[in-house]
Length: 532
Image 1 (cartoon, rainbow, N blue to C red):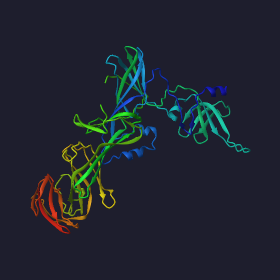
Image 2 (image 1 turned 90 degrees about the vertical axis):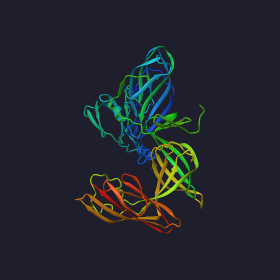
Image 3 (image 1 turned 90 degrees about the horizontal axis):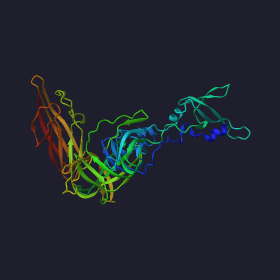
Image 4 (image 1 turned 120 degrees about the vertical axis):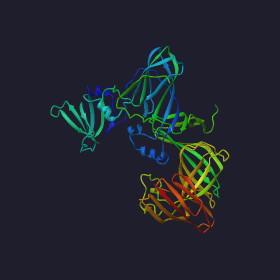
């Protein structure tokens, strides 16, 4: 009897606690051929904090559930088209291989044969996925067989095994509780560990599935093959733009290229997919959290010649980039595709800015007048380097540029090697807008900012403050430096004295451009009065 049951059982092998194979519950339905995918991916990533490669590395060792519902900064709209064979009347249509990060409330099933060819009666999303513990949970109160190692034969050294058969009463992370036919030891607690070589389960129907699956009850007016399209939103998809700028010898022109990095952690692969990327701040409500139910029911609703890379166009109030060929996105992968071919010889300009105000005071709110004399009395010495790129058609660009990282290089004339000289972030930049990239701090330029006078009258509600700002140039060529000053003590201010012409940039900022001679120094003094 034992050997017969062994032969007829479904052997689900667990090495330790890991299920190697289990079969999902069959449902009477017709086969669904390989899908044809189209993807539109939206990014909400902040290029300052989001690193696609870092996100991929973080998930490399994660388990299935950790990857399935990873909240990446972005999402996608999936259009999955397949040929289905329907019978007249009611049919059960199952779509597997859907993204595990799917939002079931966004799912739409549509027959492309016509609006009246088929209608959706019910729609379900099944994601009670098989795992070792879930499978064991289905066998509580049922018979299982556990094989475990015992001591080796002392004469031959051959490993010995013990077979235990009984009813699974309970289990946890450390033990199995088994009720056996052994009258002396009717209940046994068996540790889960290396001693267990396999567990055998007898029934095939567990209700668990190996892949997330969409299931529809479809009413067809007549039988035959129809094209059907399923559309849904899924988390676990995002993208980011990366730009490469290579300056010429004189820092007056640059070669500009761009790539997009696409990250897929949606829980599904999309082979040979049509791809679109959307750039812009698209408002979206917070996505729902993963559900704990095994199924979700909702009313179903109706919903050229290839070019080498992406074609850009305005779309509503955003910009869309459509890839002129298909591409494959494997699950848990990153892919890079050229956004546009390299533009050569785009004009750029280099500038220097001395921002001597301490960083913590640059955006201080105007809660009350700042009366502390020592606040911002001295500043830093770094003079920052910027490169400005004109994003115009005349300059070989004129392209809507998605937010991303800009990495800048310069060719070393000694060996023609490209050397990295700095990087910065850009936000979404329309055509005909300048791109300003901060590269770092100039080695041979030094700034110095000192408070030279400070008076305050709380009775008459005024503050008077004076500064002397020096910029020293240790280069063998003249430079133009913009001195940037924040008037942070109060909202009402007036420059009463200034040794150079200044420009008011906004309600709290002035710019003072100065020329500094080779191996020379420029001193600027100014006085500001605050009133309230």
